[in-house]
Image (cartoon, rainbow, N blue to C red; front, side, top):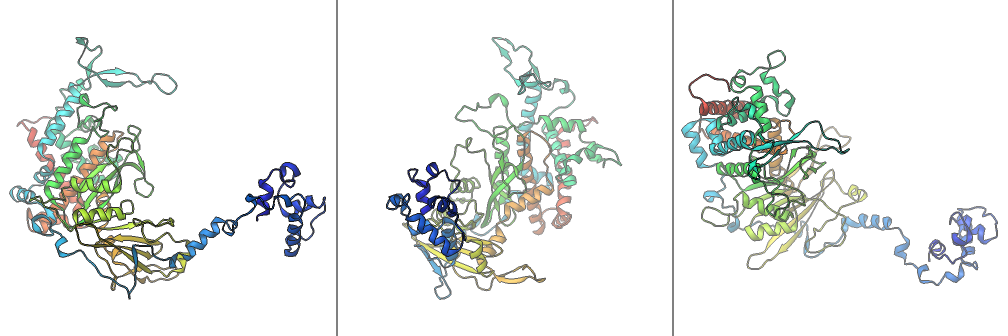
Length: 628
């Protein structure tokens, strides 16, 4: 029985505040009320408190409520929930394993790996990773960086972009309109709205083309677009992510760097003209937001499709794949699917689900996340992974058979028992990933056998401590396979779920800094951690490389941000191709300098930009000297 609950719950009790007018239910105040105003001397003395509580319990105002149902409580509810929670956490390291998971010890060790029949059978029947024979043939014939780039993004791509941009600038009809601000006042700057050529059989009033004044000044051709992109690539090599310095390419020293081959190719105003008006879709056929086929990425769908097809056309993925997210930096208000991811270097932007080659970080497939309201497909991690591997063409080989034996490395966003079972049962693919432990106490067959430890329980474990538990799965019409879940005490509690191999890690160690010691200590390491560190960072390496030499420019146009992000992936893929060919002795001998870890990537991007400038000028050159 809880006296406090009895007094506070029953308003008919004479000791309740509603009748006694007490300021609080502390022991001294209640005892004073029961004993007609006497003071409780020696409060908090154990004997005094026991006597005072007894006097309250036997008082006439309390006795009638002793046998009420609400007055009786179990021992569990007397103790606070927090204290019970702490007790459970303290006992967690010795918590029994729930079925069907089994504890793995040295005495009860079990070794398992996927059978030979499920080993990797990739392109041409072997674990090949590298450029396709298509792009190798181009490199041998032309020995030109621009030709390799056009193998990824063909000339037809630039022809269509030039047509769409020309239509947007010189052919689409628009009228000037004025918008209203939040106070109902017209804004100073008007905007242009696309309108049909005629209205009621007559030319639309006030119609005009966007850039009639520049029609004779700049002709938008495939070569013009290629030169503009080449300058983007060059400025990415020179300035990286510092886009404020881009205009220095046209400024004279000492305030600029005055790059002659850039100045002679394109005027600064021409470059700014393209930056503002380049388009990749026809606004006249844009579906309405209420249509079933509405695509939020309408303006860049063509670019994303061509980039994905182009990279897969020139690169063979290997056995190991990396699954993660990438972020495109953007903080504008033009779109609603801006994401906030505090754990990423880019915290505000457009999220992209990415699948990369774990060896070279070449991006094989990607999917821009358009928000929960705009996506018409399921966005469970299994669905995302399924779409990416099919888009990358990694499931079927040339003969139509299933390519078995690949391994996907994922972080805690994707990793789950459901995904591991889906990959192995459908494709015989394995999974290696991290999992965030939770405080969920109930456990089902799909739940992992570990929970998040409290700080006190975790500190009791020695650093480097490893606990392994495995689960046998026997689906219909196939042999049994196993999942292993490992929890490892590093600086924090780290948990892995793997299906590529089950068993103990023999002799694997890792060095860690320990507080109060100068030298790093060697601690045991599970094989899951070694595999994860080696192959998981494919998407992160791709992001890091692209960020250092990014073609992105400062703009509020979200579709231009996505376009530059896609171009960075094309440049990265070509660099991987050229380095691979140089190591094999294919192509120009001077390509070997691109393997240099300090200057190679920088020199490659500048040489690629110059090669594209030459190609673009050659397309539009008519034999006469004229300004572009």
